[in-house]
Image 1: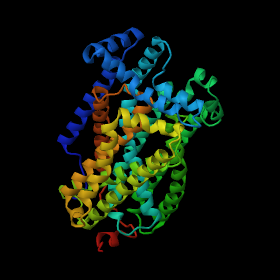
Image 2: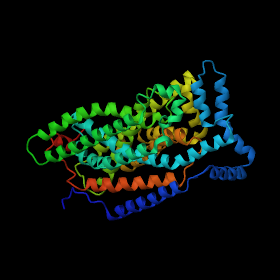
Image 3: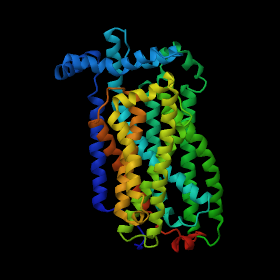
Image 4: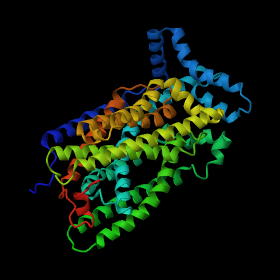
Amino acid sequence: MAKDMYTLPSKLKLFSIILIVLGLAGIIFGFLTTPKTIDDVKKIMAQQEGHHGESHAAGHEEGSTANFVDEARGQEGYSEAAMEHATDLKPEGHAAASHEEHVLHQLQTRPWSATFVAAFFFMMLALGALVFYAIQYASQAGWSPVLYRIMEGITSYLLPGSVIVFLIVVFAGTHFYPWQNHELVADDKILQGKSGYLNFPFFIIRAVIYLLGWNLYRYFSRKNSLAQAETNNYGPYRKNFKASVFFLLFFLLTEATMSWDWFMSMTPHWYSTLFAWYIFASMFVSAITVISLVTIHLKGRGLIPFVSDKHLHDLAKFMFAFSIFWTYLWFGQFMLIWYANIPEEVTYFIIRIQEYKVLFFGMLILNFVFPILVLMNSDYKRIPWFVVIAAVFILVGHYIDIFLLVMPSTVGHNWSFGIPEVAALLFFMGLFILIVGNGLGKVSLRPKNDPFIKESENYHF
């Protein structure tokens, strides 16, 4: 075997398989143990009241949303639609059975949501790496060709990962998307007005287009990249250059609509013009972080001597820069909505601040403060263990970011971090390690005959 060929270590392979088995068992357990009837919900609520006391339970049920509703009623220009959206979190004035049905729906949604959060998080690592890879080709970057095989190995997860996410969003149905509930749409003028876009057939068609476009580019770019290593002309490289330009245009459109489809339409009365950029920033910085981690792993095994600490320095600079970019978008979206104080918009943040406060502000510290502190110094960007520390903060923080995109919209205050969430993380982590490890091991890690490979190997700044 060539010195620059990677083989997934047997212990790491076994570890990934154990994660998959444990995770799958936990996911199944999560679905099997959800309450099936309103009587089950009553028992759960009775246990909670017995544990916390009736007064505490009543305050937890009515506090956050009721306070917002009371406050919102006093604001001039408050719309009926926003009132309905707010009270949907806790239907005041309805019969107890109505509230119990609502809680039942949210508890049954929890394992779906937990699985979706982890599935999308690991898929976006592969998709973000693919976008970073396309940018290198389209910009004809001279520093990065030594990292092409690493990026291609990470993107090998895109096909299985995107198919799993597709199946979840298709079969989750009304668990995630209120606009798929025909009875609700019949009584909602806003949803009726959006039905030309938010309808199930068009939703499926768009999702299929996303998957086809992303995976076809990955397939042909990988094929051309390998072909370049076997030829003495630059024909395959030129094909990849053109394909990358068109893919980036395609991605700009589909990433925006994917964000609206899979996340924003979970709360279809709410919208933000920054939302697509916000999700892209989370995706991009997380993917670059994983590229850095895989590079450090391979360097530690002595398989990529042609990758220097200068390449790691540049990857760490991207981690640093896009952590700031993500924070800029987070603050821009949050500040404008907070300052305008329009009830139709602030509902999105009210539940996240009141019911998920530790995660909401903890995410900001993990995604901004720690990367700044760890990676501010230029020299630290070349020290692998410093980069690993920053990487752990960033990946944990952006997992929480995706968690906060989904959970408040689907399960409201009936959330926790337990077996379904941990199991989904374990399953998709194991699957990601196994597929990426095998993807890295199929060919030489050195991209031969690339027109910029010499420049990349002798990279100086």
